[in-house]
Each structure stands twice: as structure tokens, then as C-alpha cells.
Length: 227
Image 1 (cartoon, rainbow, N blue to C red):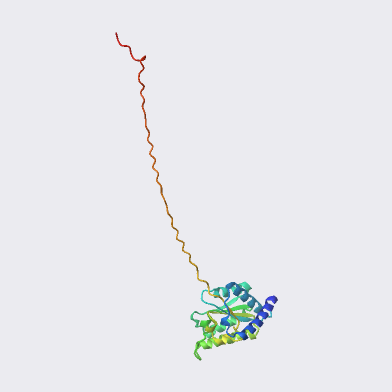
Image 2: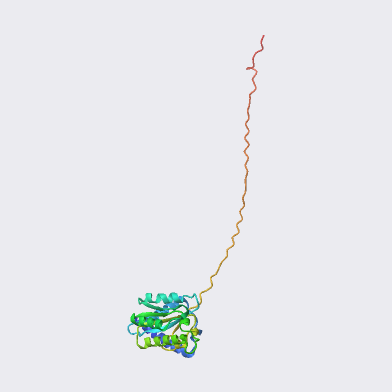
């Protein structure tokens, strides 16, 4: 854990320097699933260590790139439980959000997954709407977990960062981001096989000739004439 934590610290310094030069993290090149898995596991292990103090990451990529698979495998790979908050359509009540955060804190060290974050906390909300209140509630909860040093790694999963409420993307919340590249299109190879079958029919006719040879009588064997 200590080695991973040291690597995580170096990674944070590098990220901070990069952010200063390039504020829009969405412009970062997308990486393969294997690379993202290694980075995600290292970051989560450092955050969940005895003195890690928690942390969070925003994992984003297009549909079908394996985001949910990575999120589901993170907890088991690290040997910690996972608390999952994912409500179809994003219509999670405040009580559901509070229960998920409370459950993650009680189960620490733990991974808290906020799936389909663009639906739970959409970027475009009306002032005072239920979506905005839920987004601010999530942002405050993530920040509180970190400030309290709870050993909870918060993993937000979404399609694209700009679709998530900016309150969740601020420093100290889910400002660390990992992008997965889109899966490549399958290559279909069509093999046309032309088979020419030549059938040669050989008809063999066998003609059997039976020859019956009748020998001619010799003179000595011919009967003598009668007197």
C-alpha cells in the first residue's frame, strides 16, 4: 500500500501541473482498458490505505467501453466491499443518496460507485430543481467523506465529464479523471469459396467372349467303310 500511495502522490503532483496547463481534462487522450484498470486500482489502493484518507475519480467513456465492468471489479480486486448507487433515469431521492453514503462510511474501507452519474447529477439543471439539489447533495457528501478522512473511494461513472454537474468536478471531489477509449469496430471478413467439382465418369465395358472349339476328327479315328 505504501508504494502505491507514494506513486499516487507523485501522480497527484503531475495531475495538478497538467491541470494548470490544460484546464479541460476532457482533451486528454483516451487510454486502453488495461491501462485504465491499472491506474484505477493503484489510485483506489492508495486512497483506501490506512492513512490514505479516501478520494475519488471520475471514470468516463462512451457506451460499451467497459466502464461498468471496471467499476464492478474494483472492490473485489482490492478485497473491500462495494456500495452501489444507480437509479434508472437518475431519479434518486435524497434519502437514497444519504443511505448510500451512510452505508459506504459504515463499511469503510469501501468503494462507493455512483453509476450513470450524468443522470444522477446532470450538468444542466434548473435552479432549485430536484436534479440540482441531488447534485449538490452528492457533491457535499463526496467532499465530506474526504475531509473526514473516511476510507471510502468514490468512483463516479459517466459518459463524458461535461455531462456531470460542475459541483462534482471541483477540486477535492471527483476532479481526478480517467478516460477509456471507444471499442473498435469489429472487422468482418467475408470469405467466398468457389468449389469446382469435376466428376469424371469412366465406363468400362468388359466383353467376355466364350469360344467353343470343336476339334475335327482325324482320318485314323474316322470309321472304316463297311464292306
